[in-house]
Image 1 (tube, rainbow, N blue to C red):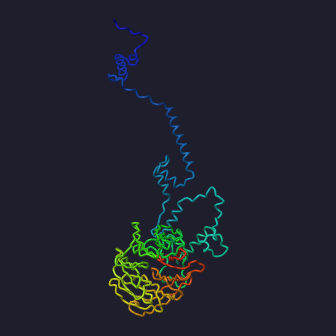
Image 2 (tube, one colour):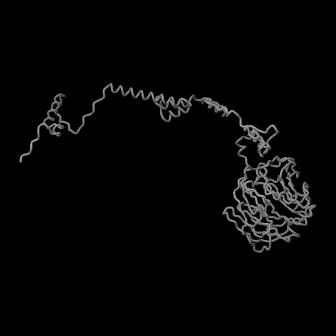
Image 3 (spheres, rainbow, N blue to C red):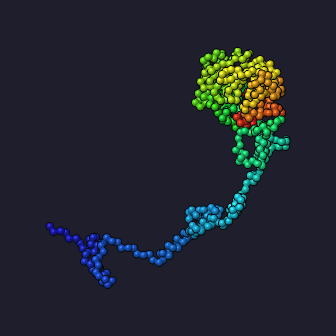
Length: 533
């Protein structure tokens, strides 16, 4: 059957969209004839014809629109940066670019006029010229009237600020005046010359506030009350031991409440670090080791020696020492070099132990009973005071008696202390007299004469403590209230302003100075560890 013929009214799409080969040849001949050149082959149908160029009117409209947009952007930028300083605007233009100025122009604007400096010009001239190059500061747009009113600080109802009042009219002070008053008290307290001390240097000074004896006058000692060392852990039990850490700003407080507490020393709040509770163990004495890594504690009625390892956080009880036949262990001393531990026993015996292993090395015996003992500053000798008024000097290595002398005027010795520099030996007796000897005379003579006899107390001297710089000797008696004195060295005179009047020091049982003599602490029977700066 013959194929069906399509209607001429519906032309083929392919024929309408693409001309035949003859038609293309004719168009190619016409184009080549018009240009006068040789005949060229017609371009393939797949190549597109380039778009027509825009007219001049369209180009002018586009240029005008771009200029208008640039003008609006410039106007908005100027409006936003109207309040910015000139230096900041130049920096932003240099970093982000600007349509009007190039980089060299912006750099010249940022540098400003060059300042020619001479070689002999000082720093003050350079700073003044640099300040003049900056624009002046603008005045605030709006000022609150309440800001101009000075806030008043109450001075009466605060126990710390009450002492700074000079008269009754200063019941309230402004913050500026209070800050000035605090600065004056600080400079006056530590003997600082405000004209010589820069403020930054003044803030960087810590510790060692008590200087050498040449600048520590006798008669009046400048010191102030601080917050109690154990304020964050109050107690009513008697404080038996107060001691500053040999290397850190930490103070230890122990008492009959079965607890040993550590506090950070800042003089203001003294935050608590840690407390160690010992069950049924009222503490008679607690002491740091020489390196400050351990705390040793004994009880009133026990032979157990507790050792608290601060590094490992372990509590180690030493129930029995081989060869030690003491039923109760109370008084002990740690050598300054950290090698030995001395325990005072009954019947006149003193036992020397190894600090590392807690093993017995040897024992020494005096006539009567040992009432107090201490190591020399070099840890090579032991000074022991007996109840018959004699002082024995022992060699640590051989445990032999090097010398024995009678404490002048003493019927019964109660306490003994040696200065850190090895110059003085202080002996306290039951009659309230403290004899200060030269250590060399104690080693060579059987009846040495004291350099000075302190007779300001009338009851038995139970506590003696030298400060680390050997400028102050603290003496105290637990028999009477307020029975504590500070002695100036080398004049051996008592400071007249301590203890201050109207203070509740009560009965003092223990005392200690901080390693750099910045603080002085004492513990009383009311459970307070008082601290002074």
